[in-house]
Length: 220
Image (cartoon, rainbow, N blue to C red; front, side, top):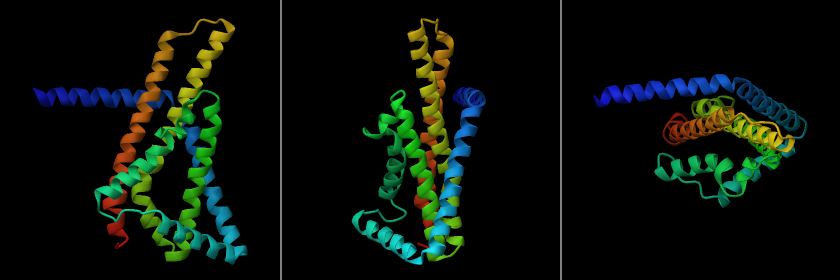
């Protein structure tokens, strides 16, 4: 009986999630395009700068090494590292300061900066890792958890965009005196929550992969 209940619950959750993705596919596609564009531009510009200014490459590597000495990153294969990675990723949107991304209108600017920052950092880190350890190092080091972590970021950005569109539509309806569709408003808020929860779940799985699988693949 319990198995049938869990199965029906899973099917309902799957259907709800698929419907949410379908309704917000344009937002998700636009977010993905923007994110990958930033990553590719970051990779291209970093390679260009490194090839024309080798000293800058050495300086950035030394900065990265010095940052590691200041930030106590837990060792691989530990719960401490898992918590560090998971909270760091989720913290981009849920710590007190960065929750400004949820403030209507103002949050759109903060979110844009976050997208540029995250995409840019991924590109720079990939190039530095490739030039330091070889081209296959960033592929092995970033791909296993990246196939989960990047969609998590995209869904989180899409969740925030969905929230902003919904709240701005409600504010405009209030200002102009137009009747707001209550059913649509509730559905859009529900979609915001679904996308946010899905991103957190993906962050949890990605953190586990980065903690227990990636170090093994890199021989750490």
